[in-house]
Length: 44
Length: 176
Image (cartoon, rainbow over all chains, first blue to last red; front, side, top):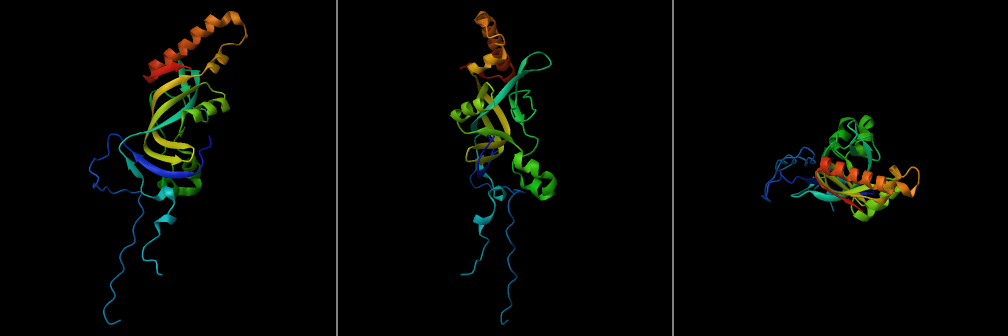
């Protein structure tokens, strides 16, 4: 069955999704953001 | 101009955070029908040897799961590329596909869990059958003698398919 090009990934959970739009849940699939660079000491 | 942050547009779609939905996605599928060990009619997938035991089916693997790719992309590439319950977006697509695959049942389904949306359809993690339609081409299963005197017998057997499917999948079955 030909489905074409990937457009988007959904996580559709009719029972488990919190209704609070500001709820943030850690997702192991998410891409890690790079750590902040070490501050450069003044004068160097 | 220096790039201060990663350009997220270059991250593959399947690696991005999924868009969360509070409702399942409505889609369409096609099936073949065959008899189970109890001589009852049951739906079966067209591209895999997979009988549908009940109204809800969960895929063995999540569709386009980055964990599969990262674990062992060589061994699991086939699973990565095909996992999920395949579906199309519209009833018209399903009817066309039923002709293409020479099967006589199509239906409306709900998909949830991880769902990959493509231009022409979906691959979903979990699927529930909502409504089934049996096309007139199902006669091919019974009209073996191509004899008009068999009409009553054929009609009874098609009604038997609808009854079995209604019982098993707990949904409305429409003879188109």
